[in-house]
Length: 344
Image 1 (cartoon, one colour):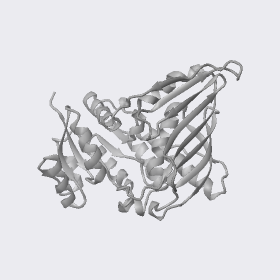
Image 2 (cartoon, rainbow, N blue to C red):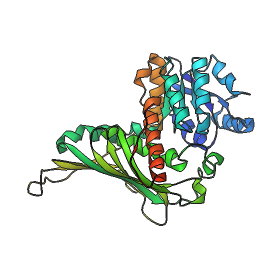
Image 3 (cartoon, rainbow, N blue to C red):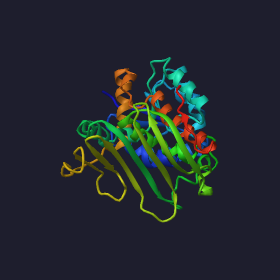
Image 4 (cartoon, rainbow, N blue to C red):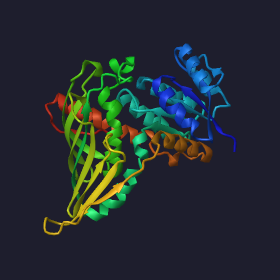
């Protein structure tokens, strides 16, 4: 089969540094065209990608019959617009998280996506981590899951090349930094333990560069009845960057440590109903997926099969991750009172 042709829409830092190399590593895919609102930026990207086709306007991308699917990396307030174009022209699309700028837009994207057979994937690459399935397979070993703690914290990175982008400095999307990065962590949590029912949270803004609140401390109640804490933020002073999920059960516990300082992420579990019968710890070292490549393999498989059911993160799932952040911010405005997570 000939490689699938991809048009990249939004040719900024992440398109150049992450998406383009990932696509080049997949023989079945081929970047053939580019578009950016500032055409000169698309032309720079085209040179790096060694392609010649640069579009003059966005609709031309979706009208081009030689393009098999679109890879969109736009400020999220434009995600609804590109989804409408994708459906209008029956063009499969993958677009970057969070799903939208607000819940009204997000609900419309879900509704539109479920009214069509066109594959529509939200690019939340953490859902492709191998560790998630490993942990789900281990859950029965620890009995009934009771609770969890999730902590993703780290120091402020003043040299982060992404924080200076205008749409992050002055975010139009609800949650700003918290939703832009937080949906990744919430995807990990919910893939393993299921959806969140309600949130009690406090947030605040530490760094002016974040554009909005950038640290979140919260408690969750899941639809399953499991309770836990979720802490997120990389706006602190000097501290280790830590990514750890601990799950507590009636017959044991599981620790998932994917902190950047580790050579490989680890999943550690131990069993026992009390301190009288605690087992030795079992440690599993994980050689992780190249998750961005896995995203593109996923949308490609859907396009070839003409089957949107194989998509890992359809809009409805991405809506939930975003809605948790929205609920946390609403809770914080109300001094930490419990807020139910909205559904589409």
